[in-house]
Image 1 (cartoon, helix red, strand yellow):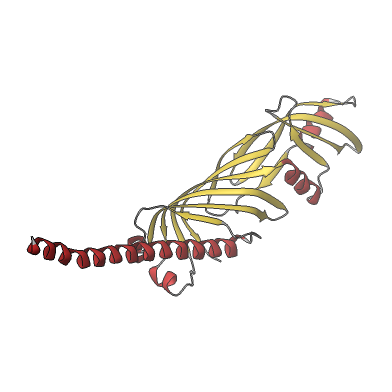
Image 2: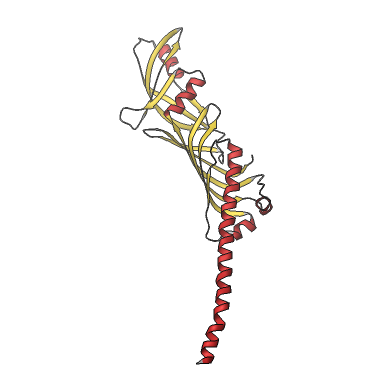
Length: 243
């Protein structure tokens, strides 16, 4: 029995050493994850100019191997208040895969570039932000949700053949070569207009919003209206983000 006690007593220090090593490894893994997420967030903030530091979450149960390789399987980025020229993007959520950040950059805490194999992102443009953009670009138009809460309407006063015309229209939404397009349909006006004037009125009510400089993306893939604004989808491949 004394031998059994001695054997059990001999295992205890070894078990404590193993437990301590596991805790140290876990702690190092957690600290490395937090540090890398912070560095990526700072780099994204510097590259996009957002006022608040973005929220960055890096997936993966074991993190240290990703740091050493400089390759991260999945990264999620959430940013708010992104300024795209005179247009303010309310929020941007991006899911990134195959993200490359060199181990040396993380080690010296100086990330110079982030490589992204593929990205899928969602940007939210509120109606007030769109209307501020239209005002800043000299277009006296107002975008609002449709009466049923599902579509989008456009109203305003525009000049047609030397005459100021008040008009409104339901619009269709589309994306084309980095631009968001608002195309009027079923235009109504209190003025009596000929065919040429009506055609010009439709052209005056057409709106193009450039969105080609959204981070992590190279192309817009879709847009849909909500009660609060427009939700724009974008994607990118082999993207390099630099401050």
